[in-house]
Image (cartoon, rainbow, N blue to C red; front, side):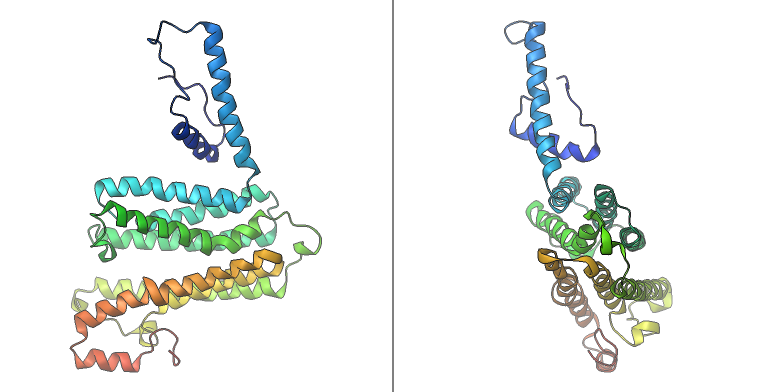
Length: 320
């Protein structure tokens, strides 16, 4: 096996992988098949292979930033799924998700080539969130000996595990869509002017981010105290909401969409599904429902827990 062509940019690697899958012979030749190929034949094979790679890379470069981001997103999650499935581990699942957010935010900024204040701040917001949450979740699963209860029924099933990793890819792309749209734009004219929507959005992001950080910190400190083993937390922010960290998560993504909305037009407004999707996931799928079921299973028989649920709203203080 001899490699005749290597991609010049990291993102082109995904295109090359597709060529190898579709044309297994590309990138190699067998010296033992009917003798040694003559120099002219080798040159012809090399040119054919290089043209195949160049054609696919050229096609990839014509795709819209959102489509290219989707390809990279799915490729990363599926590649890491194969490793996770082989070792039957979820230890880097959340870290992979947050890292993909970080990579795509900066990659779309690079594709846009504008580096406008709006784009840079939007990207920095995503970066701060992904680095903080990714490290927090990774440290937590390390402390839990690499076990996440969400995966108890799926880590031994490659297909179900694949579904989880694919859902993560969808979550990343949909949630990050407003920021990727903003980053991919070439800012011109009035689009360069910051508006009330920008400042309001970033203020919401900051409020949500701080709410999530403080709530996670309070819960981590509570869990680290041996005297609190087997108890639920109802102090600090957790005395006003049973899931203040999730409330912060929803608010910050609403904020990033709000700031992005200042320059959205036409079909780009479909990206409003970003905060809606986050809210749907956390309130109806994997967030609050899962933790509420776990809490009921552990403490549902206790009158104190029932009183706690009546006293403390599920999500929004004094409302719900």
